[in-house]
Length: 439
Image (cartoon, rainbow, N blue to C red; front, side, top):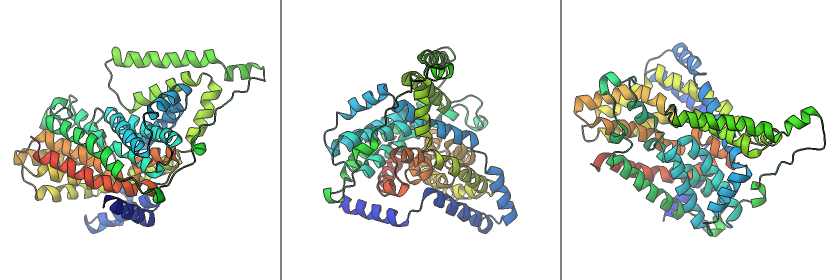
């Protein structure tokens, strides 16, 4: 039964889901029209919201390019290839490969969302090299499905914001410790349930042998760069200098240690990129080898570079026009103190399709949900985590976040989204029940 439903989902997505760039163009026109029709904005005002927001994600875009490039560079070093190969040897059958990549991706995403995006896809490529007969599309979809857990983990932007002194809603909420959000009973049980259900569901979605799409392992082998040491000029010696690469790499690692041990810094996207970058320099050994790996990695970043500004424009329109507030208020209007977390979760999932940024979405929905929780006497930490989970939930069908994984895998969004759609429904039930009924 599940295989038939999955097969139908895959066929529907392959037929109807356009390229992610085309999708963001359609979303742009949809939000533009909705702002005029629903919010009464003029076309000129919507254009102004769009244009003003268009470049608001430049810093984040660069961070995402770097998480892709530095993650790729690090994973292609001999040291990390051997680690991935050793873990991949635990899987001997396609079913074991699907289960293993799902668990690894869930764990990595719970630790840090950027780390999870890259490691899951890289590990899936390694498994595809070594396990015969595994469906490559489902393997990458399983790697990406682990991303659903990130906002309930250690890098969740909403709970970390609430735990920060003087955050923008501190006057209304005070500081909410992570013991009431990330490490609360209801959140940990949701996380545990997903750790069980997501791998099992991915395993059950395995297609029949005649419908399995495999990939030639030779196409996934990273070409080993051999530095040219035949030219003995000062420039060539610097290009291939092991001493130069190691000296700068050690500087980066020393700063990373200082950041965590002395400055008590927290794990965020910038420090992850920083560590990936300097570990990559050190482990590749020579500047020339590192630069060759950078060139290979950068070829997959085009989708991020061109699409993220359009999503920033989308955010500008949906926030500036008031559409995000209207959507949130519709769900709040039908809520009670018991059902508010569930409806906050659903509204956040809908808004996330147009505002794919955890911090940006909380800035829009946070004040509304905090006020609703206070007026209804609802559990504020639970409502906040509901918004966080909603933001993570619909990432399963949002190509915005899948772009790094797709670039690493060499696939299109439509290749994996049919499987992710099934995971979306299952995880939505698990999260919704946990937010509503778990004490």
